[in-house]
Length: 393
Ligand SMILES: NC(=O)C1=CN([C@@H]2O[C@H](COP(=O)(O)OP(=O)(O)OC[C@H]3O[C@@H](n4cnc5c(N)ncnc54)[C@H](OP(=O)(O)O)[C@@H]3O)[C@@H](O)[C@H]2O)C=CC1
Ligand SMILES: CC(=O)[C@@H](O)[C@H](O)COP(=O)(O)O
Ligand SMILES: [Mn+2]
Image (cartoon, rainbow, N blue to C red):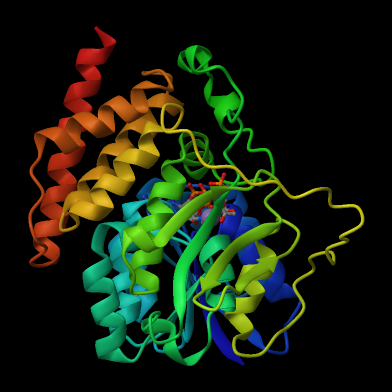
């Protein structure tokens, strides 16, 4: 039995992960679950999977969970606070760790799991965007495994040969074709974007996801984060990653080889496929996802992204080219801007203005260590927050 920790278990990826794990009780045992503050869902998950440990980052939520599980015969040990995420990531019983916390909040636990040599199933793309150099080094130094859960990166992983994953040129790869849906506003007149509401932005055409990533998809910052994620995962450069809008989200990405071949991975848009793939790899196992029916799934179309509609994608390409601390600055500013948009403090089009402003104000520097990146993250959040107050006046 393989011991699994699901970090961010109450979220969209967390729930899909528990669904896949429940289909294979003979292979996996859930050791730990973590959440921020959703007590109701965590209590229900603890009763269903009986983990050894449950973490609520919010201390009041941890206290409420203890009350909610008081009648459980074998309740989990309930821990509180962000440091408990790192405790869970280092537990010897945890062999696989699903990193499904949203945002840079997932970085430290993912790094700890890498340093402890775990198999990391990485949904938390922000960890790689903020600290890709450190995370990839920790994986290499400690014999950890990093398997992509993000649908595009999981597709790319499946389209690459097993051995030269870290040497694309030797594998004959010319470029990665990173597919994007284009989000809900692919055809919305640009002049109307200012008035978009959070609920409209979160209504993704093909995927049911958490609110932060849904807004990122609508601005295409998600694709910008994924561009940087792809560069780290597959040891490549931004000029070899081309974003292709494919509104149907059935082709999850492609790899173009020097002999003219293009390999693609297809499937119904359901995250249980990449989750099952990464859990079972190099084997395969069922996921609960319906087989793709090519006769009914519709036509496939492709188009380039329009820069005037998606300024966040341009900013991300620039940050990726700049490298160093630029992606960490961009990510922090984006997290603050998206939270402000979801709280109805700024409009939809202000998200890219906040990110551009902070990137403009804070100079990028070569990455030295974790403390530097954490300080950059704090500084970029402060700049973004301060700029947002000027927009509200
Ligand atoms: N959803 C999807 O289909 C996909 C998601 N991803 C990536 O996966 C990650 C998770 O996304 P998704 O599941 O949609 O997000 P959700 O918002 O649905 O879930 C986020 C999870 O993280 C927890 N969480 C939130 N803030 C903190 C914090 N500060 N510290 C610790 N835990 C926290 C939440 O707990 P609580 O519920 O208590 O708030 C919840 O369990 C993101 O990085 C996203 O980009 C990648 C590809 C696809
Ligand atoms: C499911 C997944 O991996 C998301 O990242 C998804 O790709 C978002 O869709 P967009 O292509 O619209 O960003
Ligand atoms: Mn994705």
